[in-house]
Image (cartoon, rainbow, N blue to C red; front, side, top):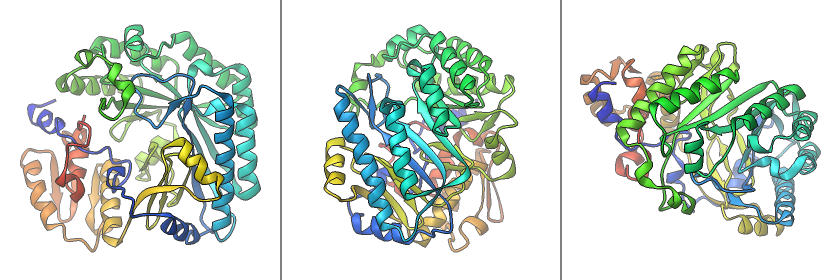
Length: 444
C-alpha cells in the first residue's frame, strides 16, 4: 500500500452501515414517528426483520455490541416474553399483516433462548406475520455452544444460514481477548450444522486484535478457508474503552498500531483471494457461487446494519433492545437498556429511544454513499439527481490528484488504489462526518 493511501487510511470515518449513521440519531424522533412510519409501510412489499438478543453466558473483552452477561434464566425468559409482546405491538400498528422475506437473529448469543425459546418467538411471528416461501432465516452463533441438539433444532425451525463468531484461531490472541475457543469447537460446530442440513455458513473474523501478527493472521486465514465457509466477514477491531468497560481489560500496549492494522487488512484480502474467495466491498469475502458474490457482480449489492447483503428490501423491522428499524422516511432505535426496554414493552408501549428523519436530500445522500460502499462508484444522476454537490466535488479534488478517485461527468469512481479507503471517499458526501471525525474508527 502506497504512503498516499496509508495517509488517508489513518483518518477516522464511519463504517457506513447506514446513512445517517447511528451517531447522528437524536431523541427528537419518538413513538409518534415510529407509529407513522409503521402505518405507512407498503404491505404489498416484503420486509426484513432483525431480532436482537442481548445476552451472552460470558462477555468477551473485545466486544463492542449491545450485550450483557446472563446470570439468571428467568431474566432471559422475561426478555423473550417482551420480544413476543413487541411483535404483537408492531402488528397492531401496521395496516395489514407484513410479509417477511428475511429474518436475522443477532446478539449477543441468540441461541441462549434455547430451541424452545426460539420456537416460541417464531410462533409469535407466525401468528402475526406471513413468511414468504423460501425466506432466508439466519442466526448468529457462538461455536462453543453449538450442540447437535441445537443444530437439529434450528434446522427444524427453518434456519438456513448461520454465522459463526470465529474472530481468531490463535490461542494467544484468544487469551488476550477473553475468548478461549479451541479450533475443534469450531470444527465441531461446522460439522453439526452441516450434518443437520444448514449448509450456508458465514464466519466472522476480526483484525487489529491484541497480539495479532501478519504470520498469525495468515495461519488463521488458512485454517478458516479449509473449513469452506460460504462467506467471511472480517472487521477491524474498534477499541473504545471509554464506552465499553469490558475493553478496559485489554492491554492497549498489545494492540497493533495503525500501520500494522493496514498491513493486516491487506494480508487478509491477499490470503482469501488466494484461497478462491471473491472480495465483496471492504470487509467481506464470498465463494464465487454464493448469492452475495452474484449480487456484487450484478450491481445488486446492498449494505445494512449486518454488513453487506443481497437484501434489497426497503423496510427493516428491528425487534428487541437496541435494535434499529429502517423505514423510507427514517430510522428508529429501540431503548438499549434492557430492563427499561422490557418495562416499556410490558406496559404495552413501543420502545423507541432515538432515531433520525430522512428528507429527499438525505435519501439521495444515502443512496450515493451506499453505491460507493457497495460498487465503489456512484452515478450521481442516478443516486442524487437533485443534488449539485458543489462542495463535495471540491473536496474530492485532492483525492483525484492523488489518484484515488476518478470523476467523469457526474460519475464518481474509486480507482483500484482508492477502493481500500472507500469510507473516506464516501465521507465526502456526509456533512455530519465533516463536522466531527473523532467519534469514528480508523478507515482501515
